[in-house]
Amino acid sequence: MLIVMNKNSATEEIDNVIAAIEERGYTARPIPGGDRVSIGVLYNKGHVDPSLFGSLPGVREVIPVTKPYKLVSREIKPEDTIIKIGDVSIGNGFLTIMAGPCAVESEEQAITIGRHVKKAGAQFFRGGAFKPRTSPYSFQGLGEEGLKIMAEVRAETGLKIVTEVLDADKFDLVEEYADIVQIGTRNMQNFSLLRRAGKAKKPILLKRGMSATVDEWLMAAEYIMEGGNSDVILCERGVRTFVRHSRNTLDLSAVPVVKKESHLPIIVDPSHAAGFRDQVSPLARAAVAADANGLIVEVHHQPEKAVSDGSQSLYPEQFEVLCEQIRAIFDIFNQ
Ligand code: PEP
Ligand code: MN
Image (cartoon, rainbow, N blue to C red):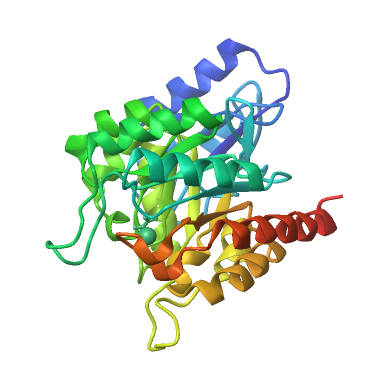
């Protein structure tokens, strides 16, 4: 349930509503945004009688929330969430481009690619320091050294850093270096990691589980928001299907569905969806046309030598062309 206060409601009126909610054993969660305060009622088991709150001073209306997810839902917050990281905004009206190698391999590799993607127009450098690999014998990432290299890329290029955290143990470390902390597809329902992300001071990029429904994905985002972190960016990265012509199947219909259900920004990863370089740019263009708020794309200057995901990494020149194209597509819908 959502309690919407009048535009100029007094602090005492808001406090009074919160006290009334808590007195009944529920949790009150004031929700920022817009020009008036709303208060979410959480942890109610079963129906809550709206008349308990509807007549309290300063209350404008009481709206029942019909979805299992609450804080992520548009019923609770009708206006789009815009996440600000320094001078970069992510969300409706902005096109956010994150790009870089699958894994950070060396200082020279990361800085070379960082310079290329910056020139093409990316605002974020993506790179893995802790890699979730299918085989324990595959390259697992440079760990903290990789994070340090990304801090150098940031200092050198001005790009902000997005990088994955694999477990709660390493969260403090990753959060110290990252501008956005990524939770990967394999961890979308790692609930202890989601709870730690809820306490983070940095925004979270939450990838869709490879066989998760949109509802399960939004419930995972709910864990993070419930913990107190409202800066969540969703990322569609393809789901597992029977097809063999691509690594995963990019579910572009998730973009309008998520935008209808949630106020959170959603970006698309065409690289892990495709698995093959020649599919990446068409999928990326389609994602922007489908109104995604941005892209995260793997780029490598020597993909044939890459330690991971070389076959799906764009050459810098291809990425540059793609950036021009997606800006043109974005402008058609956002003039
Ligand atoms: C990644 O972005 O490096 C990655 C491993 O992606 P995903 O979790 O979508 O497989
Ligand atoms: Mn990868």
